[in-house]
Image 1 (cartoon, one colour):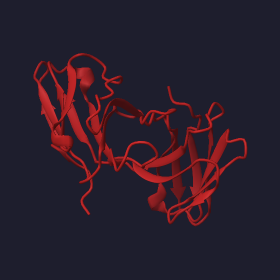
Image 2 (cartoon, chains in turn orange, cyan):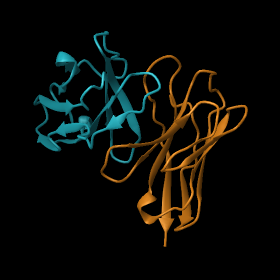
Image 3 (cartoon, chains in turn yellow, purple):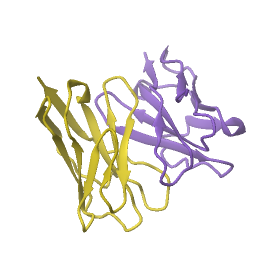
Image 4 (cartoon, chains in turn red, orange):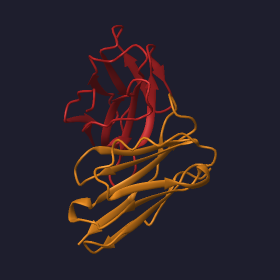
Length: 110
Length: 114
């Protein structure tokens, strides 16, 4: 079973920041939080991952709470091309499987 | 550089036939994964290969499903005696090393069983 909880869907205006929340209250100390997105008819695309510290790359920022029980993916200036399903994943213990949940469907509107 | 390549991109088969789906991972990637995604659903883990270790087959839904990875590179997912419920997109991913390395996905094979 997926170890994360995400809202089913969210809307965001083009040009505004999209903040996608994720709860992972049972996360263990050595488990990373990964974010992927899937645009229609394509394979999932890696966005970012982190353990404890906040992370930023050219695509997004990842904010992880101090207790690590939740995180937020931030797309600073959403575009129409960011419309996709966003998956928050906790890498399962010391195994290598990524278990995907149902994700958040983000709709960016003009 | 080249990403993960899957073939065919689409496959239509009759119920009861066997199918083979192919995955070419990114060169140098030691870990390889297969997932399945039914229409409108999330990704379902099927099987995972890492180097010469025994594969993790815990996600295979039945003994009709099997996978091989030859020479630590190309992988083939085989479905025997296909059923209509096998219709889905089959996604392959690879990573440079297993733990803590991002997975890179192909665009999948859309399998339709009639």
